[in-house]
Amino acid sequence: MSDKEKAPENAKEAPQDEKLTDEPEVVRFPPEEEAALLKESSAIKADANALFASKDYQNALSRYDDAIASCPNYLHYERAVIQSNISACHLQIEQWTEAIKAATDAIDSLAKVETEEQLVPKDEPKDTESDSKDEKTNDNKDEDDVEEEIVSSGAERAAPMPPPEPTPEQAALENRRADILRIRTKALLRRARARSEAGGWSNLAGAEEDYRTLSQMPGLTPADQRTVRSQLKALPPRTKAAQEAEMSEMWGKLRGLGDSLLKPFGLSTNNFQMVKDEKTGGYSMNFSQGGSSS
Image (cartoon, rainbow, N blue to C red; front, side, top):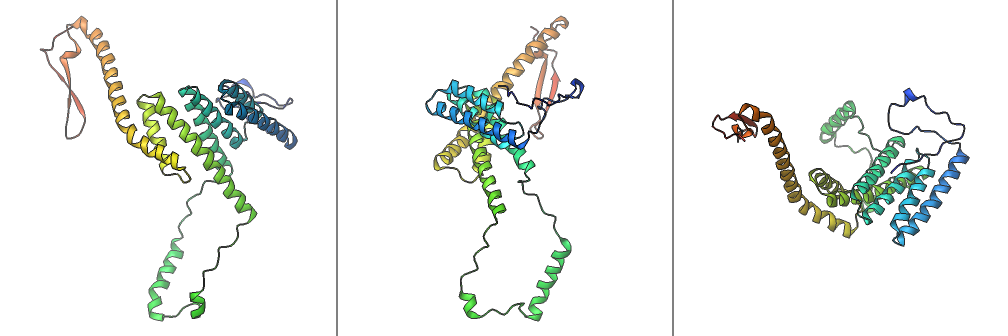
């Protein structure tokens, strides 16, 4: 699914030899034009939502594509919402590969939002000098037995002071984090289901990883919690079976190739045996002259 990005008419294209990646060029629009494009994209998305609600998934997909095309490629949150909805459409018509891709695009877009808006908490460096001072203060406290503040018995029984009201900036930041969490949860649920339905070792292992991530995320509905728990029980044996089947198929193909290469020498892969070392888990190859040729 291609995203046709809109660009200002006077935007200059980068020279051919400068296009080293598949990432579309980021062209910032003037505020007025950006607002107009976002309004247009939102209107188209509302159209697509209505089509989705009426179960017209193919036309909903087409309108979601139009919404993405109208949305500037640097408005990552707005695009993540549309991409997650695109994944939902593909799920409904059982296009698992496309659903996986759209959900992954949404998750990647949300990661860009967090990076650009510095919403990812960073580990603060530990102030060892300050910690050392605190330890010394605590060590001497029993000796001095002096409180920094004298608190009356009435104040001790009183309720603790309420936390300060968040500033408008802090409230906006928390709302943004909550919005990102909500869309990421939906995208992960959709990708996990698509991977589970698509099957195969890689997809099933990826579904397990998604469901494990979801199991640690807050705000899941009771129904989603049940789905996550159920899938985390059902997926491991499916993943193991798929792994064994694919490994067996791979060895079968390698054996066929090996036999065709060894036949002119009167040998076959039966002359070679893989022996597992139970202590290390590794394998060694032994040659047996008595193996039958094919």
